[in-house]
Length: 247
Image (cartoon, rainbow, N blue to C red; front, top):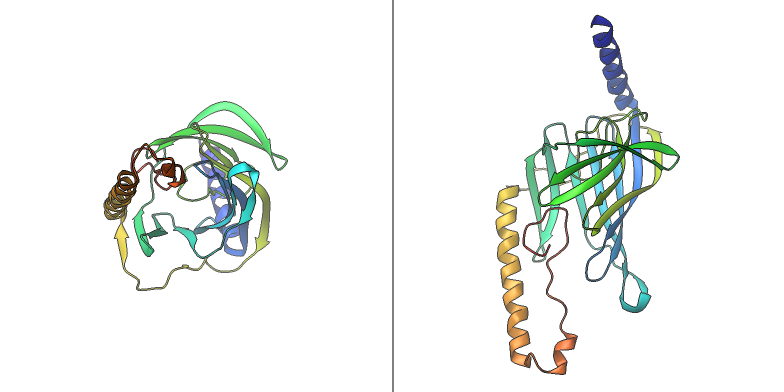
């Protein structure tokens, strides 16, 4: 028992020391398979004490196969410590900082494996706020890291999929770089933060207004008119958490 504790202690100390002068950097493709499928760039930087996930909207797959660049006017950022997550959200053209306790994930190892970027990964499953996820992680990389709000697996998560095939996150590069000091808090200090529960209420109110507005437009044109073909499909913004039905 003493030997097991010693091995664990040494491993923990190694990770802590590594985190002081090294940083893990992973780039992922982040696929959103909604009305118009999107591919976003997701970058993760972690030092085992803090991590920062940043999402940029890069390209949108339009109808009939066209691909066009999308402006990078807003970045979703997730700053994660061992206790909490602060995320940057945009709603009704307003930016919100949302702070919540680090979510607890109940992971189940399936015994299945998959190779990603030449790294042999174990498969694990979990549920999170309305969606079921399949994750692939490698326990040999000397970090404990996962993108966005995910955490709790003994290794580095290189891929995540939802069982409804709407979201897929796949690593396309991984590197360990020299880095001294903590990962800086990316938001302006002193900005007001709201709770996750408050954001959910704001999101629902915004969605109801949008739904009613589009419904009124459809009624004014007439449901039998061919002009309704030009009205976009009523669909909430696709995100990790299912806040409203149809998300």
